[in-house]
Amino acid sequence: MSRKIVVLGGGVGGLVVANRLRVLKDVEVTLVDKKQEHLFYPSLLWLMIGKRKPDEIRRDLGVLERKGVCVLSGEVTGINPDDKSVTVGDEKLPYDYLIVALGADLVPERVPGLSEDAFNLYELESVKRLRYALEGFPGGKVVVLISSTPFKCPAAPYEAALLVEHFFHTRGKRGKIDLEVITPEPLPMPTAGPSAGTAMTVLLALRGIAFIGSTAVKEVDVSNSELIFNDGQKRLFDLLITVPPHQAPQVVAESPLAGSAGWIPVDPKTLATPYDGVYALGDVTTVPLPGRYKSDQPLNLPKAGVFAHHQADVVAHNIATEIKGRGGLRAFDGHGWCIIEAGYGRAAAASGNFYATPTPAVRFKGPGLVLHWEKVLFEKYWLRRWF
Ligand SMILES: Cc1cc2nc3c(=O)[nH]c(=O)nc-3n(C[C@H](O)[C@H](O)[C@H](O)COP(=O)(O)OP(=O)(O)OC[C@H]3O[C@@H](n4cnc5c(N)ncnc54)[C@H](O)[C@@H]3O)c2cc1C
Image 1 (cartoon, rainbow, N blue to C red):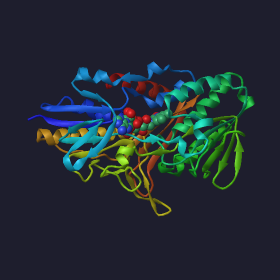
Image 2: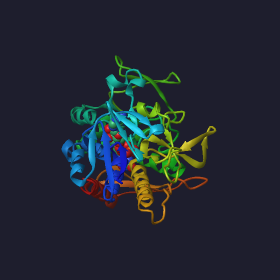
Image 3: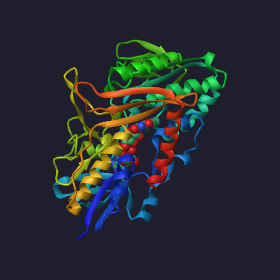
Image 4: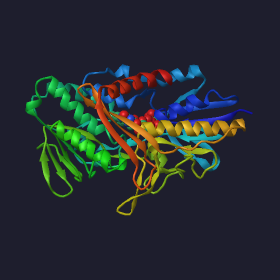
């Protein structure tokens, strides 16, 4: 009898898991996404500076049909593990295995004024407009603002600041630009540990980019182009690039799978939930890092594509093993890496084991030319491998 495998989300995690499981005998793999295309998010930063066009970094999810995956375009409106089904629009889909990879929702409206007066670094249409705003920018203060934590890809806003710096340098305008990164984090990429964070602040300083940490925004005063912070301080800007607040997708937060903050708690090694046959992976999960706390709260594994990818490999392997009834199980071990574009044709990298105790064993290296080309090659690999 054929097993029904339902994958929710056609982003990084869902794409990998559906591709890996579709080759099994006697399975029907259905992938559900409200969007019809997959966007390779890391390349948004190249789009921002005119090095990519939108069609170069997105792919039609429908292509997966040719590989035997049933692609259902629609909004997931219910996850019902008690009767082993999900609801998509008006349709109820039964499953034997369910993989939830619905990512994180962006909610700029949580910060008053943010939607009106800022470019959203994490959204395609906004980045397309930002590209032209940068081109026409006469000079002044550019702020890259991280509005709250957690957010996906802890390195991306720093990468954006470094690329913007190079962008203005190549146009002979660097002398007319003040560049700042403002964040509630005490150091960049805090879950990667203090040495990676310090290395990033040094890199920013070498490029003349101010790092303003431990500073949380309360609202944006649109009429005065001014940021107002929780501690009452204010700062003017001429161009605002933001990472908006993130939250768990509503359908997840309202499901029995959700933990107290809406994200899905999973077994750190197997990504299993307490429900039979149900796994969650990637940005939609919350995975406490062993032995690591801040103000008595556990620190969590960062939300990043590299983790969604490796977790998807583990989940697909273990489901395949169970269906075939032979072979060994695998565990996700907390390893991850991130190549951070730094401009000037170079990139830095942070890599290591985030599950290591008492601090993660993450090394920061570069920037160098080879790392930049590794990032370019990975983009090409990704868009060919899974489509
Ligand atoms: C600018 C930028 C740069 C980045 N750079 C890097 C990088 O260099 N390295 C790295 O590791 N990570 C990077 N990331 C982070 C990475 O893109 C995410 O961590 C990754 O995409 C998470 O994968 P996921 O499968 O969990 O979720 P996603 O890839 O976000 O996929 C979730 C999918 O679920 C769908 N969905 C959501 N809700 C519903 C619903 N109710 N019904 C139907 N479908 C729904 C969405 O449409 C989406 O397709 C970057 C992110 C950004 C924004």
